[in-house]
Length: 137
Image (cartoon, rainbow, N blue to C red; front, side):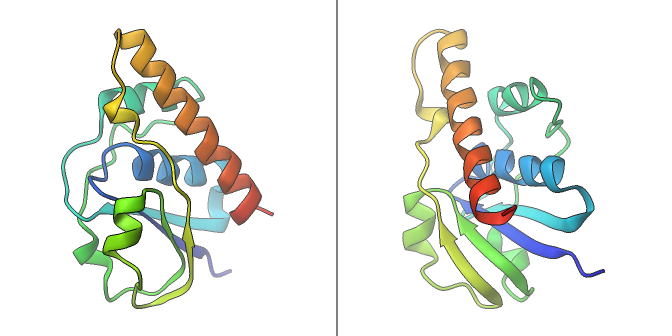
């Protein structure tokens, strides 16, 4: 059985695209092959990993990657999860279908650690809803 290949793109590949990759892997099991990348690579944000671990999904071993490594690969879906990535990659070679989901950047949240974690949780839940609605239908 061929797996549906999905690439989630964001600016820094540190939170939104990482959470989307982990969520799709967690929710879809063997049906999908999930990847994520950024227009630049940084690191996976600890609060993103913490928010994901709360729902039984470990993304702590995922690494931040640039989209260059995926430019020549075929994907069933390429999904931008932030407006900056959508503008930077209006067309993605090898994508059968291109989707854009705009989520706020949780790494810009301010306040206490608990308040910032709350923002990561909210974005995680929004991403999960879009995955269930648009990819797992």
